[in-house]
Length: 418
Image (cartoon, rainbow, N blue to C red; front, top):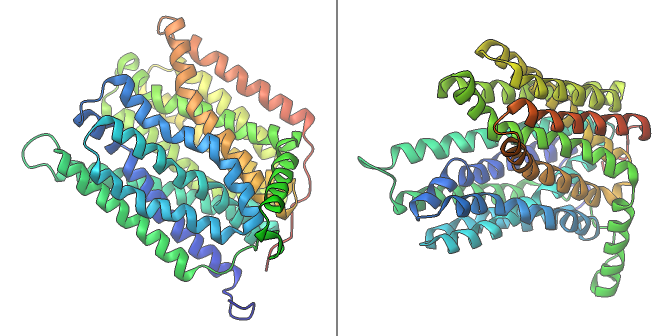
């Protein structure tokens, strides 16, 4: 595609958003609540259910950094198409699953979808955004979250409607995963036919034919970003915030129902308020960050999350829990609207992929660690939620202080590819 015929940046961004919604809808539909119930239908024990649900996060932790760094070399479009091909093809492998071992393997492979696509898509949006990184990356992230929410709802709806007078049969799950694959195919088709060239790879054409050159430049990009203290600490803010979020996802419903005495609908409303607050506030917070600076928003958001998180176990009724869920959602919007953009500001455009890979790795580590650490602390404290949540809140506060006093904000990048 020539420079003259290439779509403008706003068109590429719109296509990226549409692709992101379809891809995230597909992935969420495959996971929540369908995956765990599919494992139960296959006879999985509780520990196997946990492993099946969590194994895709392991894929992301291992492969997000290499995927992002590789996109710096061979170009965003190549890697995006590779990740979207996993979204499109792997869901149909669920139709062949007849046992828990097979489901575990398919789930691990399915994790490559977000491991490849996630950091590369964020790097591509950073390429397009230039000085508007906070705003456009926040819009992209919010729409991805909306796709995730729609996918979970659609998966649950189909799982409710498909069975005929009883529990869902294996064939019902296979039908759902066929629909999952359909949305993955749609995402791949949109990217293949409507997306512009995006940022080219940093290797000259002749160098791409040399495995040694590719390996050398790959190692250079990974080393440059992984050794940057500012990138690591800033990415850790997202990781710590996501750790608290993961703990709340796992245990806020349990606390609300078993300790406070709320019903299941009220417990679900707490999660809904938190996610809607994040969705609504992120684009505005991103725009503010582009103009007023990212660091103050990250510090304020982390403080708000830590305060809300540690106060939740002291609340004994629905109204204060709703208020705290809203506060946590706003804090999450402050952090997530600025952290990824700040990481991108810290590095050259040719290293955006590696930077988003590091960022995504910390995101996944935090999300995986939150429920595990909170569960261990609850067990150690004999079910005392305040005693379990307090150390995590202190960790958030300590990390925020480290970030506030040691990381200096750089100017917003303006090196858009357009």
